[in-house]
Amino acid sequence: MNASDADELRALAEAYVAGELSPVQKVMLEDRLRASEETRLCFMAFLEVHAGLAWEYRPAGVELPQAERSIFLAPSSSLPSEMPNKAPSTRNRQLRSKKFLLWALPIAAAVVVLLTIARMWLPDESPSPAMVKASLHGQWADGGEVTVGSLLSPGIWELQSGLVEIETTSNTTLIVEAPAQFELINAMHGRLMAGNVVVRMPKGKSGFVMDLPQMRVTDLGTEFGVSVAPNGKSLVQVYDGKVRAESLSGPGSKELTIGESMVSKADGTLSPQKSPENRFIRKFPPRLHGQELGGVLYSRSKVDSVRIAPPAEPVVIDADLSEWNRRNAFRSACLPPYRDAYFVEGMMMYDAQYLYISAHVGDPEPMRNVVTDTMDFAGGSVIVRVSTDRDLGWPLKGSAANATSKRATNPPLPDSFSDRVVSIIMSHDAQSNKARMLLNYGFYHSDSVSNRPGWRGAFRKDADGRGYTLEYAIPWSLLNCETDPPRAGDVMAALWMVHWSDADGRLCRGQLVEVTNPQARSKPGATPSTFFRDGATWGRAFYLPKK
Image (cartoon, rainbow, N blue to C red; front, side, top):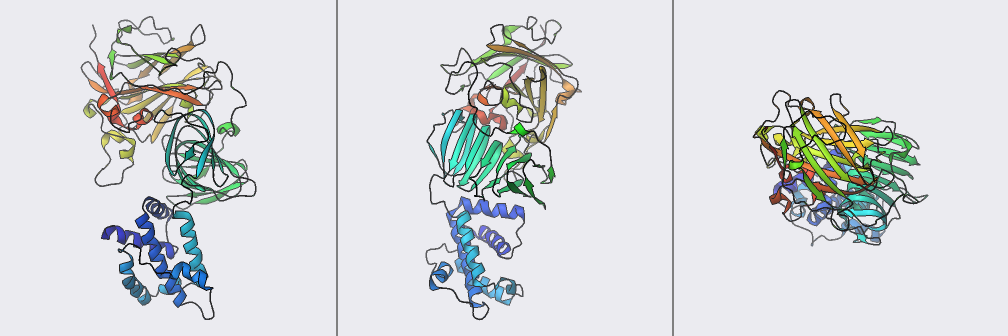
């Protein structure tokens, strides 16, 4: 640990002891303590100094058993040198400070502080704080099948498809609905970065903490659901008991009871919001309908570009593709044994007013999507991501990580926030029997619009009920380039994704990712389910001249 890091840690520790940590500083401190054993030891050494001072200046007559005194007065010869070596100067400085009187607490309070720190941030006694209890089409981001009975170590886990039930060593149940990215910190603490999770503790138990991007939810004896949308918007909904919701980037804390919901906006503002009872999947479906193939769905990208040509005749949006030139189509399928049943044949065209997209999707459970929130793509969808800004070129340099970066060595790039980098999410609403479209702009997805006027879309189910065709016309105005749309000769970025659902139209059963950059997708650790967050992995879109 260098001197700068040690000084920053000391400042956080002093604010912690003084009770002056802001919610953001608290999260920052927790992240640092979880990430480094050296940092934890330095922090504990700092607390030992203050515990010792509190003991020396305790009120007259306060005594503790020798065993408890040893908790904070034990020698620290094995601790790192950065902070302990500076302990005398810290002690002298605080003795000279009037504020020290606030820290000369009864020693019992110092013991509580140390025990709390040890419980929250020292490594969990169990190397595997959780186990997979049940899985329905569960698949990790690397393509591996979720195995019932497997142990989950602390760290970040990404569920690409399916529904997974996890039980921690504290007997807390987590029902994770794909696609989702979450972190297991220990048996009583988790973090959700994307997706849906339902948390249920045994009756009479409480205290499980779930962190969201802008909100901390603490269980007070309850069952609750939490959700993080692609744009970072966080939601908590209480099904039983109550929770405490706290903003992580500003003032605001509220206890919620049965039936209440709270959302946290990008600025950390908390506000109540009504949510439907079936917003979350709270238990495994009792049965599956239709044909059950079992296993998982996954693909391996082989297509690096899509060719976009002007139409030879007027395009009628009716899901009949007879006017489309199939010469520029690409076909991609899931890996065996699902190749023949789960596939996509994709095409794109353009003219001065519209971008046209069509797809024939092999799907044994077609057009069943009943999800009605920002995760509606999980119930079955086709997503086409495009850049319409020729100045950004190919490959793109933006990413979701870059959009949220605060490091001077990795400042946010224009690609990451460009409103001309657009995700076009197309799905069929089984409840209204209508096509729908959601647009997300940039990699941070801070701006989203649903069913904005001007577009046209149509779906048609295959005669044998084993697939569907979609056809869309999206005006360039919705892609923010109406004054300078793509033209012949342009080479820009694009990415295709297809999501399949279960028979109930809620669970993401699998996905296909296609039109990718061969160099980026071949890098170690590259997982297709994360390509949409990284522009460098997107393939090329060639805009062809009219013949």
